[in-house]
Image 1 (cartoon, rainbow, N blue to C red):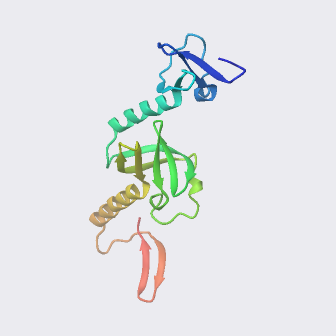
Image 2: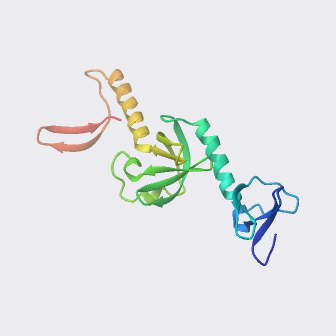
Amino acid sequence: VDDRTGLVVMDIGGKSEGSIALAEFGESLPKPGDTFEVYYEGLDEHDTAQISKRRADRLRAWERVSKKYHEGDEIQGIVQRKIKGGLLVDVEGVNVFLPASQVNLRRTHDISDFINEPVRARIIKIDPERMNIVVSRRKLLEEERQKQKESLLSDIQEGQVRKGMVKNIADFGVFVDLG
């Protein structure tokens, strides 16, 4: 570790050494002799190897997640941050995109409320070339709601007394949520 430059100099087994910004190591600071997987990006104009630990970590995480999950699978992750058009959700080290329109059953006023919260969602698209996964929490909620509806309809009988919550009053009657 070079304290002057904030760089970690690494022997990558070639004719030159490589350097990585100390920030790429996060909380676990490297010590002499430690071994890390890095991504080799090529040589710069001074014949210094351009390497990245962060990129190697991302590639390994992508490989792991893309082999484990497929379109249609349910996933769980933690919402990291709000970006243009939606949220980024960390699923086992891979940021997946949750569009704002797919966050809830109805349009959510402020999707920022989900930041740092765990969410379950259904994978709707995997793009291996762009290393991009798009998920929908709404689709999963709709599926669960449909199952509840089917369960209620198979159980409910004429003449039963049930508790419910009035959701809307119209000229022709009342809408009651029975769960």
